[in-house]
Length: 308
Ligand code: CP
Image 1 (tube, rainbow, N blue to C red):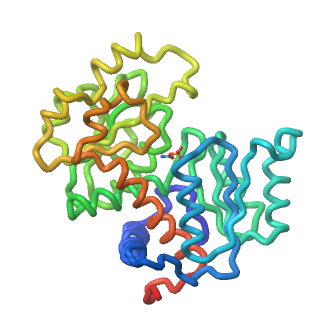
Image 2: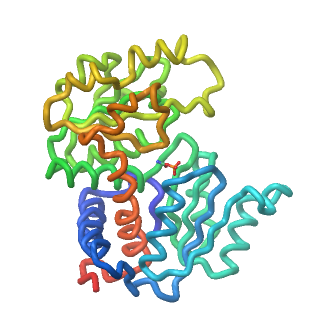
């Protein structure tokens, strides 16, 4: 595996290898000295053309914990504002010797294009409304840690599916890992041809909640919405928000997830987001170990070997 562009490119064995490697690396992260020498002398470039808090910081932390040199590039303040293209930006960074380029871009397909221009590995850190494979991996890792399994889990992914790269990557990954995903959204926030995705679809959150082991709430991406997809924020929240009353419909072991950033009070109430059955903070911590595993495996750390 040279690049990680789509969760759909990962077979079940590849996905489990990443999750198992992350589990091993998580044990290292519990030590007082967290750093491993594995990627000493290698360079990881974080190329962010779109805003990010969690993904950018966790890729930086992951690369540093593996002793890689890290170059952080943000489009804001760069020559992109003078009109420099993605290709020329990538070639400039390549000239500085990037072994891996982690890219976030508003254009779906940008990581795929980049993989044709650079010699190093490309990792998709979110491209438009297309995919966010490392988010899906850290979500699966978080589910397995809390619930002990992925096979047969019933996962509801709720909200703005239309604009969500997280939803698509989760559906592809969880399908190959044997979980059953139900997408829950108003019809206006579901993508065209969603019936061809390997999942179920429902418009009725109240009917899906009691059957779910995991409820993953998605942010309503107002910045990507160029039309009125629902009458009002209050109406959306009333039909599709996870508040205390809806939370009570979940069975006692069910967990609540959110990739962040959240619109507290819209898709999720503050009380639910902060409850002990919410994994939202754990997801962020798990993001570092899962991204360590991805960089370690892509950059030729000893696959299948001992983590030193
Ligand atoms: N979940 C996620 O991708 O968050 P950021 O946009 O903060 O990276």
